[in-house]
Amino acid sequence: MRHTKFSQLAQIYLELEQIMSGNLMRKILSEFLKTIPKNEINIISYMTLGRIASKYSEVNIGMAEKMVLRSIADAAKKHMGVIEKEFMKKGDVGLVAEQNVRHGRKTLSAKEVFETLHKIANVSGAGSQEKKICLLSKLFANASPLEAKYLARIVVGQLRLGAGEKTLLDSMAIAFTGSKKAKKTIEHAYNVCPDIGVIAKTVVKSGLAGVGKIDVLPGRPVQMMLAQRVEKITDITKKIRGDIAAEEKYDGERVQAHSQNGKITLFSRRLENITAQFPDVIAALKKNIRSKTYILEGEVVPVDNKGNLLPFQILMARKRKHEIEKYASKVPVHFYIFDILLANGSSFLRQQYPKRRKMLEKITKECPPIFLSRRTVSKNIDDIESFFDDVLQRGCEGIVAKSCAADSYYTPGTRGWLWIKWKREYQKELADTFDLVIVGAFAGRGKRSGSYGALLCAVYNPDTEKFETLCKLGSGFSDEQLAELPKKFPAIKQQPSNVSVAKNMTPDIWVAPEQVIEVLGAEITKSQLHTAGSGLALRFPRFVRYRHDKSPEQATTPKEILKIMKARSYK
Ligand code: AMP
Image (cartoon, rainbow, N blue to C red; front, side, top):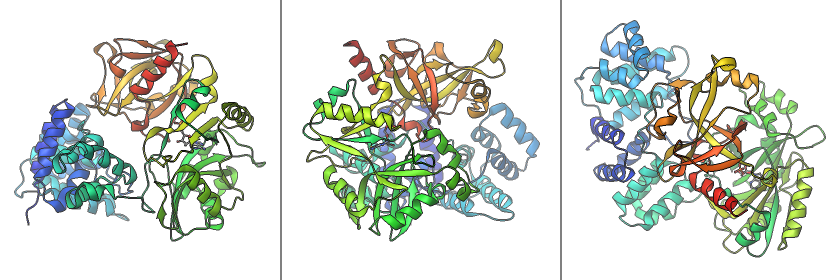
């Protein structure tokens, strides 16, 4: 049996790391994928994204930088002190590994590395640190310097090649199908099944026809459907013809509940398993949903003891490992269900929204803390507007208007016109909120010395898979929030390859593009200082809140900014 050598993978990483052009990356990757034995394509796909499992899997290698440095020291037979000193200078475990590891005797296969990393992830209990270090140092002892560099980065979760999920999916389309249509089919399949290994295996084994058949599966999270926005509430009727179902927009946490023969798992919008946080919701689902195998979606909202909706931030108290039961009664919640993707074992993805809603009504017994989203259905925008005024009184943040048309399917991971959100803030003149990713910081001066003076915020461009800066943000923070910025956004040594910054905007401190915040902005202008949409900037930005529920790839995009800018210039 032929195996892919880990050195081949390292060579590809090196090439990908050095090029900026997305097209060239796709070319290199697709040529490489063609050379991979069919039964290893899943392994290679995970590893190219710097992972050893799907993005929703809970497999965790569990080795911090210090443990990786120990493994390097053991393999290189050097003192830990020497290795640590080098790390202080270089700030990258990959470079330290490359400098110290010498060519081993054995040829490492990608499979062997992958399997050993899983073994490391599975080690638990007493002495687990030592066992993990020992397993990793054996890999280092057999690695070349180049292999060691990338191995170390995979272990600490910092491969960051600049080739992300989309590049890899496109490369699969080019390598195995050759058709242009393939990209769309593969991308859709990845939204339905966000497991790159499963997608890759299906492409090579059953081609595009097989990929097209990938459907929802209980226990496997589905990338959630998103809502568009309009500039004026009356624009909703331009986008949704016929009946409009206006639902209350709850300001809580989006939750996808999967029941597999009665075993319930909850996933967050980032596809994290958050089952443990909501034992009360699980108990209520078990009692009040009349189906054994289903996937449904809703919003968990904190409420007071009279059932009044409370602000989203209160939910943070539930994000804990201990005393969950105590906090479940201290911070009660309601679960407002608004969609269904699978019922009684059948997929509902390609059922129109009215049919999905009907099914929800059929299987749900509304009983606190479980409710169906409240809504009104009308063709008339005046009715929708008066419903909007109503829901604000209830403490909702607005409405989501949903199409009832024949093609109103559940579209995973897509921000389309089937759902349109309309929020309170949109009514205020010249104020919009943006979900931005922190990519850097500027040192504070005067009153702010010792902390950060401003954060550098970016949008996410899904076409290039790069973070492009939009504004420098210094206001809206309380004194406590200001003081904790350096801890919340620690410095990294280098500019990540997927962050694009103009020369005159180089921050004092680089920050890994991992966290999303909501920012209120007053004006969008053209500016050479920022890279968003080749030169857009947000003026007078103010911090609103942290959006821990959003992943960086779910941040606002340059296209959305352009749209807002265009709409405003008509005012
Ligand atoms: P935003 O986070 O501002 O993009 O708004 C979209 C989010 O609103 C969704 O991801 C849901 O978490 C949330 N939401 C609240 N109520 C509803 C509803 N009735 N239908 C759909 N989404 C809703």
